[in-house]
Image 1 (cartoon, rainbow, N blue to C red):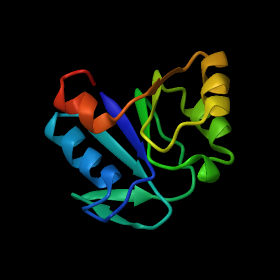
Image 2: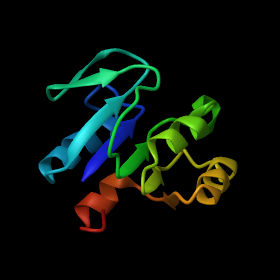
Image 3: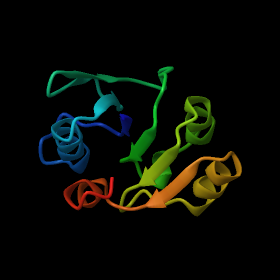
Image 4: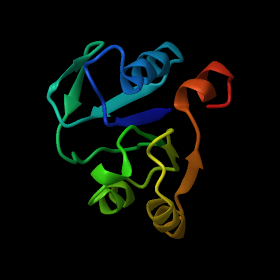
Length: 118
């Protein structure tokens, strides 16, 4: 499964970094998008809103204050689902994504991976 970690970080103590590590350990193909260039476990963090193909799941690690313009970007990626990790919940964005036929889930990616529910 191809997963986009949106809000990726090079800081090993950040949840986005830990999620990247766990996703890779579980055999997922991972793409990273963040606000600062860098690398995480050999993967390049892409900036802005790169055009990506075949994304199944987007796991969000940016809060509502930093979600401007995210709807159009996520819609253009046409993922099957978007996971709103704790602190990223946005009822408005979730409603819009659901109207576009994209599943949304308020959950913790780390918990989903650890419990086999991802």
